[in-house]
Image (cartoon, rainbow, N blue to C red):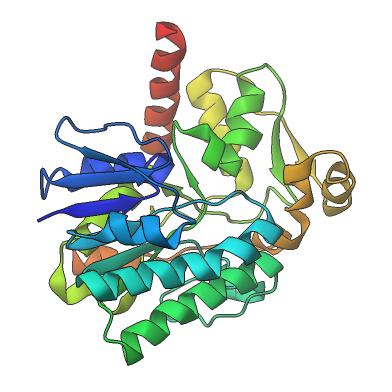
Length: 314
């Protein structure tokens, strides 16, 4: 039973390949330049913005996992996301494949982020959120009207040793390792729980291989501790044996920095995730699968140790 990952090289794709090895040795990794995670992985180079390449990548697969991450730029998202997901759905329909879409929670905006469940309404309050809501609606419509077998697997912000994909790792770890103050956005006293990529990936693999999980939205497993930005900084500082002093970047400063740093230009519209409590509730998943997510303190310890080993071996 071939299981295929579209977007196999990122933080989630790498961990997902490890998790899928529990279920099959027939794993296809698709990206521009895929690299093996498991010895038996099939490498399938492709341009996933090409409809033809998407169809070729999907062919022969029973389950398709979508973990693609396009560049964090609203214009790119608006241009690439809707046609890409339509191509994947069309390919899945033609080749009779199931689809598991690894999603974020940008489609949920405003005060709805204070307690995010599978029932939280789509309520985007950002341009990037509008794109993700459009993508979700395309998938849900295909489930209802085209009999697509699909799962929307939602994830909050996440962290791991693959730092590039994590705002928290950029703000906290990258600064502390240089002897600088950690940073946080807007208000470090607000709750902001995050997912640990091994848990998120294992949850995605479990869902994909559970037939009765399809045609639903699931929040992927995360520790239920209501931890603040300051709490995250304290955990990392403790494991790194360094100062827990930090600097909060207010909204006005983020906007100014955006004039000079492209990635910062994309952040102001997302500050609703930091200027109020942001709690991601995965109790539906944890209850259904009797799953206990890795505790935040343990996840941070594992992340710091893994990065320390990498730095030592370089």
